[in-house]
Image (cartoon, rainbow, N blue to C red; front, side, top):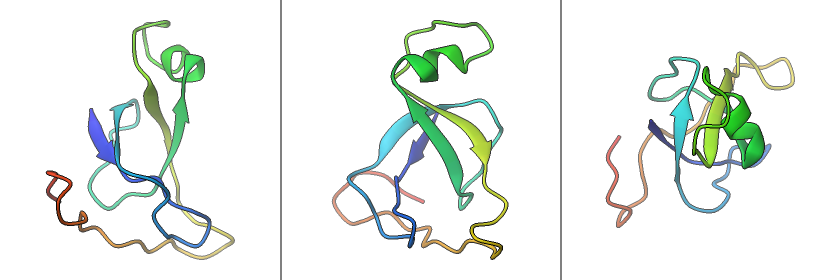
Length: 81
């Protein structure tokens, strides 16, 4: 399980952080592809486990460029980087 901060196409935060089951061995600072709802449960090694969000891929590049995103958590979220 990892804390994941959803972002927009430009790298700006979109909403607050979520907890996601990790199927890819992603690490801190990685940009990942996140799925939710029923698709998150299906993405797990044992299908239909009770999860709301799952990481299903690590993003290598965005638009042909290597992605860069801040790796610090906003103050007051209770999370640490």
